[in-house]
Image (cartoon, rainbow, N blue to C red; front, side):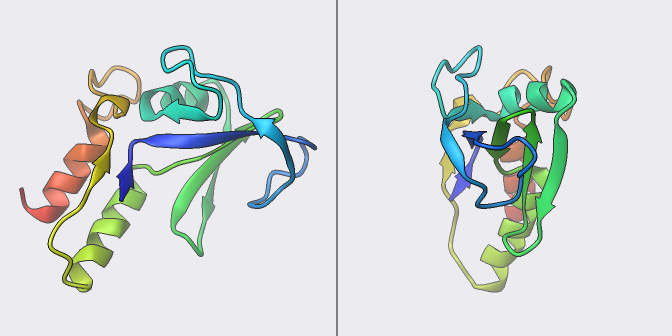
Amino acid sequence: GFPTYGKTFTLQNPSNTAIGAPASGPGPAGPYTRDAGTLAYYEICTFLSSGATQAWDAPEDVPYSYKGSEWVGYDNAKSFGLKVDWLKRNNFGGAMVWTIDLDDFTGTFCHEGKYPLISTLKKGLGL
């Protein structure tokens, strides 16, 4: 699947930011989605622009970011592109996005155009 959201956690120790670091619970709710533990892609872009550190999990080919005790794992255009390549190499017939409204539908948060994640998927599949 192709998620347009990220899962957030509150780190027990803000200096331990690695994948699998102990967490004390979900991360804070986003200002728009208002759901603890989940941020829309556009909320993640705001988190990134606030000074969060970006990192890449090479084994899974996905980004994650952290700032203070807040940690978020998510997909971006690069990881979407890598997933599309994998789908095509393995002869899958399609892809599923969850959800349309959590992508940057206005293009104003991420500055990557409207629906940057879904657009990456569509372009990669030749749609």
